[in-house]
Amino acid sequence: MWNCRRFVYKLSSGAGARPPGIRPFGLWLAGLTGASSKGSHVSGGEALRKGILVLALTSAAASGTAQQSTISDLLQKAAVKLALAAAKAAEPQTIEDQIRFCEIPAPSFKEDARGAELKRAFDQLGLQNVRIDKAGNVLGDRPGAAAHPHVVIAAHLDTVFPEGTNVKVRRDGNVLRGPGIGDDCRGLAVLVRIVQSLKDAGVTTPGTVTFVANVGEEGLGDLRGVKALFNDTMKGQIDAFVSIDGTGVHVTNVAVGSHRYRVTFKGPGGHSFGAFGLANPMGAMGRAIAKIQEMQVPQHPKATFNVGRVGGGTSVNSIPFEAWMEVDMRSSDPASLAAVDANFQKAVDAAVTEENQRWGKAGTITVTKELVGDRPAGSTPERAPIVRAGLETAAALGFNANLGEGSTDSNLPMSLGIPAITIGGGGRGREAHALTESFDVTDAWQGAQHALLLTVALAQK
Image 1: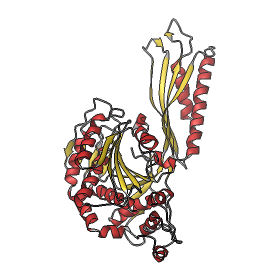
Image 2 (image 1 turned 135 degrees about the vertical axis):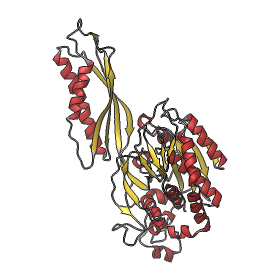
Image 3 (image 1 turned 90 degrees about the vertical axis):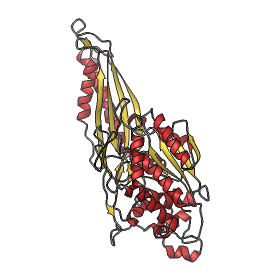
Image 4 (image 1 turned 90 degrees about the horizontal axis):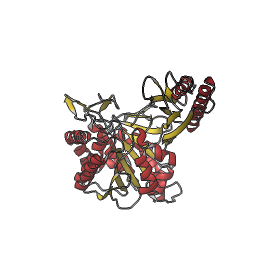
């Protein structure tokens, strides 16, 4: 889920809109080709991975070694113009796909049915080597003239809603209402629209694009889909990664990392009257929560903590033998996240000691802290080619792209130093992660066009 946004600036297509020091697309794309002011070459994939920039297009032209291509050039190509027009014209079908995907339940760890539907779509669209990997990710390749640059465009299959949730989508004018309709059924629908529009328009690319509908982005899914993708299925193959997650037109280049724990307190338990005087696991947990709530965290870079779920006990007249809580902590700064984690650990340990001392029963209450979620923090620099591409493709289409931070599938590649961003799928979403989630379809085609042009731009040699 794309969340906790921090808008840095907006980039529009108007004159003077580019922030100081930001290079136009043509410069970074020259870097992508491997050209330098000295005329040296590297592969397209290596250039993208290292974020090579050139000092000027003129020097590259003088060397005669770079095939110059800019967004303006791409927009003049008949096939690209046709694909963009097709993406806009087909928005009603994109909406139908969005609804269809949304009405297939897909809780984290149970994405099989929705994944099967995406596999059918990939097969029908003519993607090559369509497969489902060991984790459950659905992949399909669109080969270019060369294996590199190899770009992955992804959207996640899972939602936060448990089994049994009513996922029927209701239409209310321009607004669609249903759990998961924006997060991330919109991303899945845009993924399919990109493939269809590129196919219909006959667009070819120098580089290869793999489209992925991945599992396990939400909650305790803990990015298991992209972890499998980068550590196993496509290990060492990916030069750039784009996740389509959330709504609107935005570019997320800062990854908010998180640690999530399930903390379990245990004791002997007993009758509330007959065994009174025993140390109480619930008491230890209460002390821990109180200490956690008193922790101080920095505002810049922002760090947060939350005790989100608690449970335990068997009845009102029983001293519980077990109590548990789930704790979430976040920051885009790895050091700040580590500091919050360390303070959390101290708070829990101190709470157990105090509860045992209160009843004079040392060692009666024990605690385990299970790390159930580990999303790495990281970032892709604002000047990196992929970030420039995300912003300037939007600007070329006349859209404003917000640059900010969030917790998405891009966290993993960012932490590995692989160029990655997350973009929105268009439209306007409200109340994500709530049963009342909604999606306003007004101008939603902008997200599809942005994603399509970015895909083509990143797949240039």
